[in-house]
Each structure stands twice: as structure tokens, then as C-alpha cells.
Image 1 (cartoon, rainbow, N blue to C red):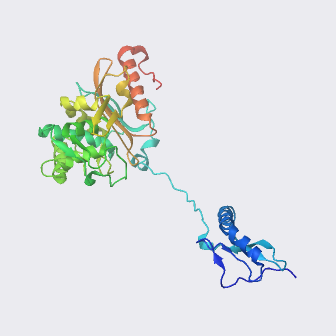
Image 2 (tube, helix red, strand yellow):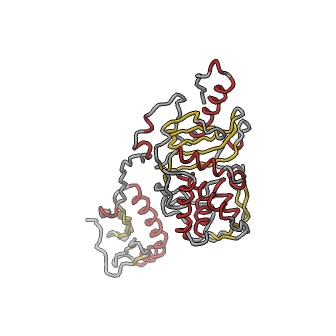
Image 3 (tube, helix red, strand yellow):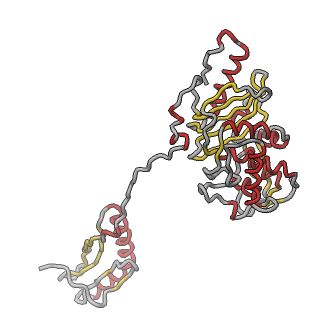
Length: 369
């Protein structure tokens, strides 16, 4: 009766993955020689087959050569079970979407005549302080990278050397959101370039480096941010760091309109924040940055100062100083939904103001944006 012979103690192991080629002692010399010659090829083939089976099935196949009574070699497949712990498993868990602070406060459910996407909006005539449009303007919310406008104001008012070189360090890496940056640790730029990238492209490491290298250090810089806010009448505002990545940086639309008005008086802030693009030379490579506000390149807009912002707790945010229908206006939009929604809100307000100013008989028409 033919069967599989037991494995002898001298079984030859040809691979590390325990794929064995076994030859019975009783096999004829010629068959033994043939088996030895075929060992590497058989072992390699068995290894490949085993790999395929391991992927497609929950069992692995071990291939052996055994000799029958006639001395003929036969391939014998022996299956062995894979331990349950070795089998890959995928666990999927539903993750609830993060709510912005505006959603938590129920602000997004409030309607307005212009049907804006933003939970908070404020439009003020800069020359007369007349409020043209208001929606939840006193709500205090996280302001994301609108923070950088105050960062720039403190730097500008300190009259520091803008040509002084600043190097990005590990301290400037985002520990709030784990966000990435194109400015690698070790990158060196002038203070002016750091401020340009922070205001134009909302570069977080650049903004943090500006605060970290301020005389007295980061804590002193944050103290001065809050002091400046208090001096100009921003009573709803609090800063804890210079980038806006922390949701503890909070303010109201009313306060932010004040900040825009004061910042607009600094030519450097007007120039850097409205720059369409900028290139920085880092030696081995050149980085090209664009303005984070797409309206800057729109010929229909005359923007004097701007800043965008976004973190999940704040939603999409935008502040601007712009000339619309011959009027110098300050616009604030907070907690907007969707990537382009804050820009659409600005367009809607611009058209509404143009209608109010130029076509009085249809002053109550709502422009579609």
C-alpha cells in the first residue's frame, strides 16, 4: 500500500521558511541524485505557492517530496492552519464629524436676508463706522489664522530689523493640529520674508518663528498681542499663541473689524497681505507661494488688506478691507461652511452693496453669489 513516509531526522531544509525537501533512505541512488539536483528549484516554487496561498486563503501549504515503493518521487501537499492571531483583520469605526464652535452655539441655523454661508458676518463703512450688515457680530468664536493679523501688527509696531535672518526650528513645528509645512526645520529666511509668508499664505511655522524670536521670547510676544488687543478696544479677544492653530485664540466680528481698521494703517501689512504670490530662495530649492485669498487676483475687487483662516473649530474665516461702490468697507466672515463659501459670501455682499448704492428702487433685492 502506497503512502507518505515519515520524515527522517536528516531531512534537508533548503529555505528559512521551513519548506523541506525530503528523500527516503530507501530510494535508489539515481533517484536520490535527481532529487538533490531539483531541491533549489522545488523549494523556490513551493515558497512562491505558499506565499500566494497565504494571501488568498486562511491556510498555508507545505510542499514535500516523498518516495514511494517504486522509488518514484511524488509531491505531497500538507496543509496547516494559520494561527488566528496571524490573520489580518480590519476594524472600521464610524467617526463623527467635528463640529465648529459656531455649530455648537447653534449659529449656523440662523438665517439672514443675504442667505450667507457664514454663521457670523459684519460689514462696516470704514470712514463713517456705519454698520451696513450684521449677523451674530458679538458671538465670540475661534478665529484660526486671522490671528496672524495681530502677529503682524505687533511685529510692525516693534520696528524690528526686517532683514535679520530667522531659522525654523523644531519648536516651530505644529503641535496643535499636526499640520505640515513647506518650510522644513533648518530653513532660514529674513524676518520680512517670514512675515510675508505668514500674512499672504498663512504659513504657520513662519508665524510661530516670528513670535519665538521676538525680544523676550514667545511668552512676551503673546503678552504683547493681548496688550495690543486691549489698547485698541478688542474687549472680546484672547490670544494664546501667534499662529491661530489653537482654538483658544478667540474673538468677535466686532473686534476683528477694529483690528482690520488699525492694521490697515500700517503700509507693510497692506502690502504683504495683498501680495498675489511670492518666491523664497532656500539655496537648493525655490518655493513658490500664492495668496490664500482667491479674490486677490479677481479684477472685480479692490482689496486693501485681507486675511483668511481655517481650523475645524473655527470653520472658514475671512477679513478684508475693500473698496466697493466707492466706499471703503471692512468685511468680516466667520464660521463659514465649505472651502469657497467665504469668498461667495464676500461676492454676495459686494453685489448687495452695489445695488444699495447705485440702484435705490431695487435696494432690497438680494444678489445671488
